[in-house]
Image 1 (cartoon, rainbow, N blue to C red):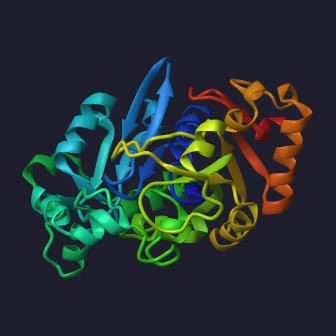
Image 2 (cartoon, rainbow, N blue to C red; image 1 turned 120 degrees about the vertical axis):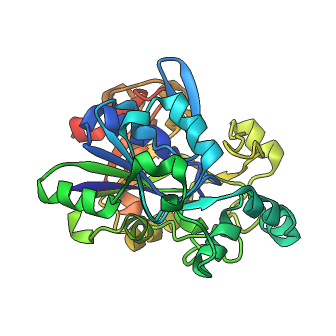
Length: 334
């Protein structure tokens, strides 16, 4: 089976942390990352912090093969840099139909004032490249000599693994409310970021899906323009300790309390079988680095139980710190 990790709101929820933990704990045969270089996933492991824009956070498990599916977009400079940083060169597979962004697409987006100023695009060339792919004008991985040693058929590899009863995880990009189809258009990204979008980018059947984990942060953030229900002023966010900056752009993230009613709706649309809540220690300081549910204060436990009740989904993971293993794995607790 394949487990999906989906961003619950606007991205920045901590999918990288959950994916890296699951890779070490659950030992998948394959790990996949959908999306593109306009979204960064951060992991902290053994005291080292790493931001990734293409390579899945699940690379931490050295026995896991890393796959980039046909629906994602890569940039060669970013890819080769991350291959060196993560040491995955000998276990990387790239689908022949994975599309490649060039500097030309990046420059085109920089010249688009609407995207860069009003929408708040990261101007990484993703939208321009997606447009060219639709128009059949974009080169694919199979067209690049420097990628020939990595070319494979990702949908077939994953499907055959599923048919053998093997396990894989797929790490989605950004969040549901940034979906081109389901988000607050036009303040959205260039792809479908929902659970169905992840499957479409990989190219496998829904029948192989095990768990669909919607990842939420204990509070909500977003970068760029567009609606943000209950948005806090910068002063209010600073007082609560909700100040964060984007992994890719370095821009300050706007902040708001977690909207549980909206979260419930998003869980339903994505077919969530479980949810993860990260950065609980931002709300309850005494939760920092706790790794057992019983170690949480009664107030923190009630908060988690209220999230479960309101979102109508069980909490499987609770993040309590930056490190990969700063997590309460509720699958073991209950």
